[in-house]
View 1 (tube, rainbow, N blue to C red):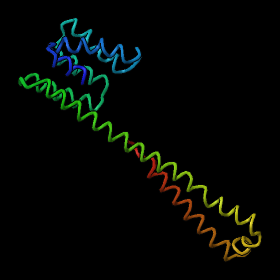
View 2: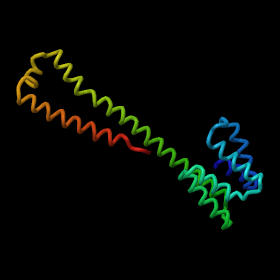
View 3: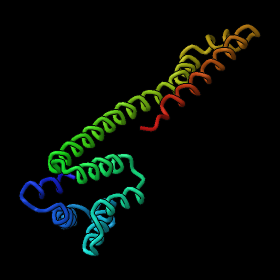
View 4: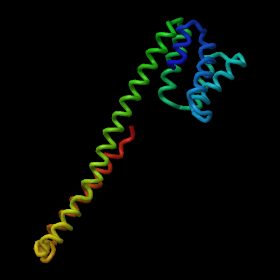
Length: 174
């Protein structure tokens, strides 16, 4: 998007800006990259005299991506109404990049919490093992009679419930 906007800022028409962006993306991305493929398809459609609005709409139909849909909707509306395409494309690009930054930040925080959760899952077993090795008679009180076994069974049920709830919380799709 920013490449298209920059090309339009220096005087290229929208169609030529898209074709030029395809050439620039070929230098940045490897051939199988999705963005390169989609811009190449749009460039090919433009060479076949297919209107650019239709090319972007078809790209949205192929990708079914929310950002592509938002961009396409704003782009088609601005193109038809005669709005300032450079400013609109710039604004949409900045909004998409901000949204991507927020998504990456959320994923980073979530991955840290997943690591903490994984560590916290093993701590009770570590503590029980440490107590068993250091103070062998202490666990006899917990597991050697009916009351201790009942209390530890309840604790185990609470622990397993906490693990289940924690795994549901950390399995968030961003």
